[in-house]
Length: 297
Ligand SMILES: Nc1ncnc2c1ncn2[C@@H]1O[C@H](COP(=O)(O)OP(=O)(O)OP(=O)(O)O)[C@@H](O)[C@H]1O
Ligand SMILES: [Mg+2]
Image 1: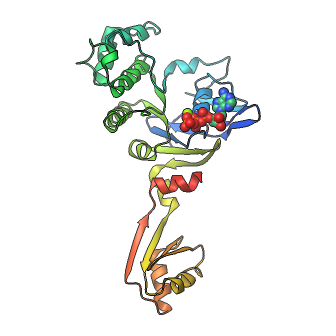
Image 2: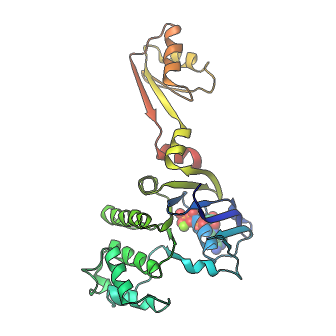
């Protein structure tokens, strides 16, 4: 079992009569990229706000690096970096000057560290250029760099690729993977499945303030199972037969019948025993997108 770096227990937040977050139990392990996936309004930013001590929880506990985080006790947050939405940068200052400005807020961040960060986020060549001429992707990478200056062991990113074009998204994704390879734990929220699938080791899916799934991407997908599509002469009859199998969910579509919850061998054997021989059998693994839609519908 890997070491847990961030844990929430029954974390909840009500805004008046609106329950934004309800009994959320997250377990983020050291060194992983953890994805916090959910549709708009699901409670991602509210959860992150509570973890960062910006929003007071209505109930529940937060444990960061084995220390409780409360409004009165948040020393552990010094070891956390964060980037919520677009970074706040000074447009008429250079990349280096922006980092120097942030460095003043921390102890022990010298010019050597600033150079190291510029290198890490791929902005060494652009270091002396004014930020106002930067692409959105470059600004986002600089923002990430600023959040990393004080050598946090955990970095929390709320929708880090929001508003970026595909190239910018790829730059940020590559950087996130690099951070994890350097031993920094990354917690990132997103409503983009594709992104989370590509970059995260484990994910939690949140819907209407509640966690509906949590685990390794591969495990979640294998649990969500597969469906079998069969081409048959009489799809209606085949559908009726397949529906007799325990746990089968059947749909017909033109010349095809589709069944989930059943192994392909079982489906084919059952049809053949009843005089229907499929001319085509395709096993369709569910992807994260269908899992996400299923979990958040
Ligand atoms: N300050 C607030 N006052 C009242 N309601 C709020 C407040 N902040 C958030 N909410 C509500 O809480 C719920 C969760 O919002 P939150 O911003 O956490 O969702 P999100 O998952 O970050 O969504 P998005 O993908 O749109 O950023 C929403 O219904 C939202 O309207
Ligand atoms: Mg949000």
